[in-house]
Length: 295
Image (cartoon, rainbow, N blue to C red):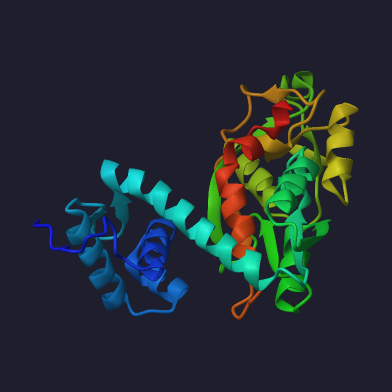
């Protein structure tokens, strides 16, 4: 690979190229990235080839079904994200200086970090012209509200097929260990109503393991599930970040659970300028969010 950039500048690629690189990595391929940035797959491929040629380094490893980062690509990606964030902040700073914009956010209760309020406060400090309207609830109804035009972005689990993955998180069993100790007795469960995706995971995993169960409590909110578990009424599964005090993990004697995807959903023609800013902010603070159960 020969360096073709004869410019006096170290990097002359435009912002669209950097956005394309980010999209290729986050979407896992050129086809999905092309849809995200509204370009053709061949145009994205040409952009990446030119960028690698300009940097004189290989950024991406192209497989048959996936694209992965080289060590140099991983380093450059972090800078690309910072450049894009600063560019977006600059536009927002001058373009929205005199008019506040409301960002309507839906957050699935079972994914809401314990310190969500402090995360939101820090986000608003970075974007003072963004007024947040926050709605907590179940994932599927929130997604319905999104596509009815009532929300700008929703953070939930894999309730629908058109979300984009933020990160993956381990599902865990929680409850008093003695409730699961006797394999001959049915497990007493505390679950959210259908169509909660975790409910079906519980039923499928226990059926496969040959464990019987009773649905002791069907709770209408995650807070109610957490309260019932703390009271010793039954067992449930939740993402690890949704575990609170007095909710012991059960790590033996029950089926191994899969990871769940934390997704974000935006409408096809969404135009709120702060949507991607919030996504980027959460990605930057992903460890804080995932470890919020320790707070």
